[in-house]
Image (cartoon, rainbow, N blue to C red; front, side):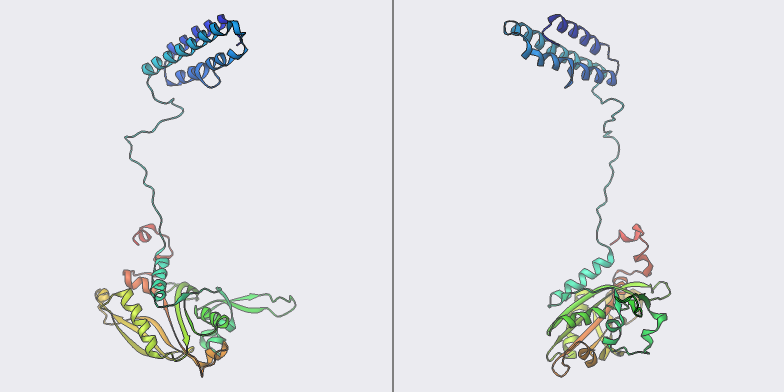
Length: 343
């Protein structure tokens, strides 16, 4: 722009005309950018003061300041005339419209149930452990006292996989998706010396026909304690604490003799409490349990003459369905937000 006073005068005339003739917010914004923007005429003229000779700098600076002041005044007047709204290309916020609600997520009901159960057993020293979902036959069957030919090993009752051995010329190694979280107990005992006190949640897989109470993938949570001189009375006291903490202090509990290959003696636990009066059934089964079979202790290198242990296991979906009065196990996996948002 140099120090041409005539150029400053012309810029003032053109700028005032641009603001006076602005008919809407868009035109006003264009005029503001041209004359008062960071790269506009006024900024350029003010920045040119440094190039003006000292003897003329005072007069030039005065003219530049007058230009800036009058253009700013003209812009404000035009703004009041056409309105202070943003140009149509950049719409403002309409405060009269309802806001958008942002939903805050939370843990799935199955996760909530697992965390609550783990927390209860954690109070009495049970630490949480995990294990692989793809297992070998030793950990899923042999170490759990389930011999070859046992119905539980039938191919129709398991998801078997054929994985290549490390030696590609060797016979494929039979593997399977674990059918129970008892495999985690075996792996824990293999890696730890007694005393052991753990709680093991996780997914398990069985090729069941899907209906209201069966699913090919579900969750189990199992507990294990091994030490010297543990008895069935210790097992009963641990489960009684869990039942009363989870289902309520009024809950009654009973043990029914049962058979499991990995525990001896074995039992199933039934409960009766006010929570289930709507079902009109006096007793409801919730879990299986028993004293760890000596063959299982031998399989992991524990001396059954010195150590005893107890174990228990429950289906997480079944526990959640009972407590929250859910009638269909499929609700847990359909991702229906109308269902999931209730919990």
